Image (cartoon, rainbow, N blue to C red; front, side):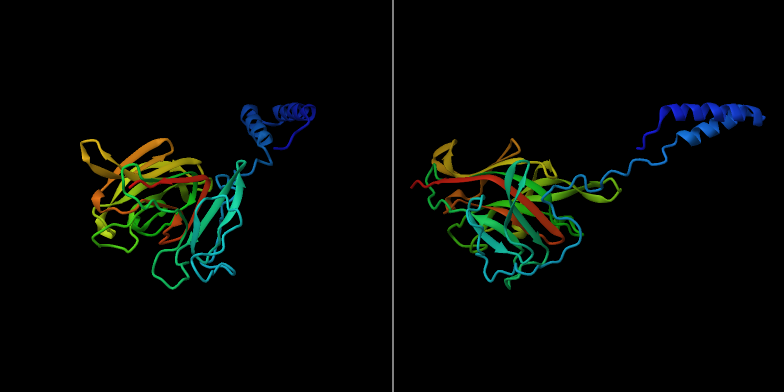
Length: 312
């Protein structure tokens, strides 16, 4: 807002009032009109930045499905030397490669994917994930344990709620007896968009509902999974993640064991027992960005660690 010389301003007002008192038959009305016109700021402050909620490492605006240089010939694309995120890269998108950014004084792994960007000749959904060495034992006390911090900036959006969203991590593990995928997901943690108005009144993604998409039976896919709401998190919020998948003793029967996928998301525990524990042969974890049936997804990971135990 512009600044004015106060002496000039008040002198001008007195002169105007004096002039009007001699030239108007209704001085009160005219004086109010003149004073209102005078004190209106002729150079108002501009509207707030419509991108004020945009993270510094967020991509905005128009984009293409694929970009030159990112069509790696296999999913095991070259990784960054000394990548800050643990695990082996699995890159099935021609939109971008894994990269890193610094936000809030912390280094983040950058995972960006777009609808239709799996260029490797399969019908599977695009993804940029990291796989972690699986625990191959099923004895009580065996586990795979991942920790990290996630920021969700954007997830897939379609015309159908059932197709919305992007997976940020998943529990994996094969089983005996056949059924389902050759490398099945046990449960996937799905972020779905929640919309609100920005400063221009446009609807944008402002937060995300986190769901656990869990199997009903070993090898369950599609209708063989339930989607269970866990919690809502804000866009660009730093969310502490702790996911542990493993085997423990059944507290109700010492001769039996439980195969579990226990998550702590932003300080809230969401424990779940995997069905048919005796059929499980592995405990595994993947994380990054997976599935985008419409639009684009942008996920950031930092502070990642991994450990595992294998007990017969």
